[in-house]
Length: 250
Image 1 (cartoon, one colour):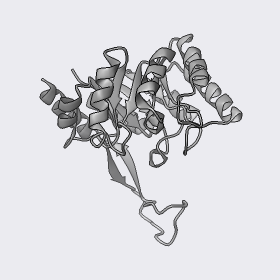
Image 2 (cartoon, one colour):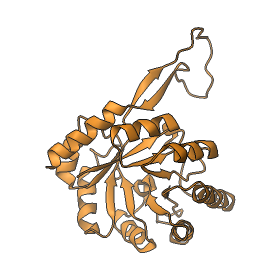
Image 3 (cartoon, helix red, strand yellow):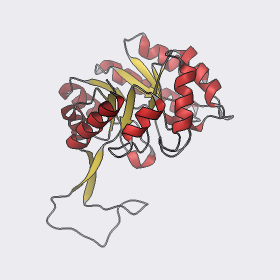
Image 4 (cartoon, one colour):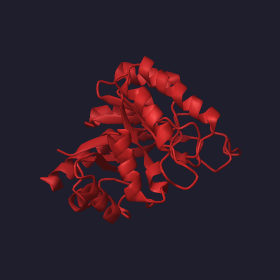
């Protein structure tokens, strides 16, 4: 069976992921920025309502993955929050300036998670590494459960060849989980070509606001966005992705 992890941008999305049959939720916020750490309230409520695995993203800001000492302390504090709320794991990634994995800091965070019974995923910071195959060995050595990757490209389909090679190099020592633009139309081919056993998708759709009055003369953020719609994980999309992935795999 191919398992699906849903990248959920809210508790509502996390519940939709669960209802659709996902096995795990990566809870985050600010998906348009690649995802950042969700609030304490989001984590607490998600843990209360979910019976599937919950892995919050630990990423203090958008941008690169080279973090200051203060940002590293924030990450440790956020992991303690995940421990205290009963999460199943965390999703992290820290790099050095040369594009290598920051083994020392990552190991400290993984150790903090594991000693409290939490697992750890290395996220798509991997796709910004200077050497994928050395980074894979470093990540395995540190003790991560899986690597989330698009194969160094904007989408997993574009990086499918690299993903397939990573699966081969991993040789069962760690799970290679493709993510980035995976949907109903491409998941079958991706699974067939790469031989992965778990996949990652937001499976989202646009939900229109129920506001009756809408001021269309203002933009609230720095970039143009529709202020009267939100993106939420779609239950049927989750079901479809799982059905198609497993139909192709079998």
